[in-house]
Image 1 (cartoon, rainbow, N blue to C red):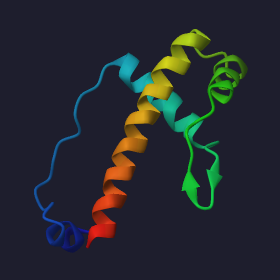
Image 2: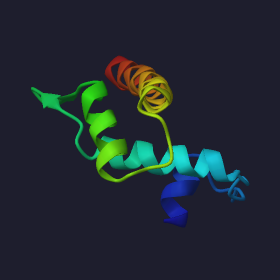
Image 3: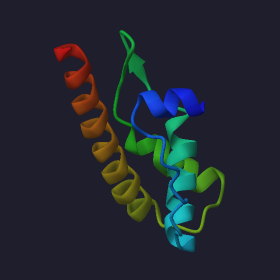
Image 4: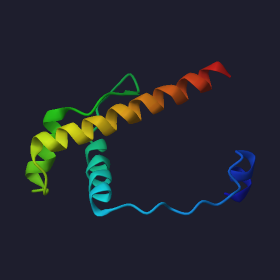
Length: 93
C-alpha cells in the first residue's frame, strides 16, 4: 500500500479528522442508504427518497423522514457530482 500511495503522491499520512456525533450519524445513514443504490447500465443513480424514508422508519433512526431525505439527498448530490468529475478526468487521459 505504501508503494501505491507513493506513486499516487499520497505518501504523507493524514490523521483522521475528528467529527461530531451528528456528522458520524449522517455518514452512517448515508452508507446504509447507499447499499440499496439503483444502477442502470453500470451507472449508479441517485438514491430514491422513498428508500431513505423507509430506512429511517424501519430502523427507527432518530431523525424525521423529511430531514433525512434533505440531508441524505444533499450528500448524494455531492457524491454524484464528485464521481462525475472523477470520471471526466479519467476519460480525458
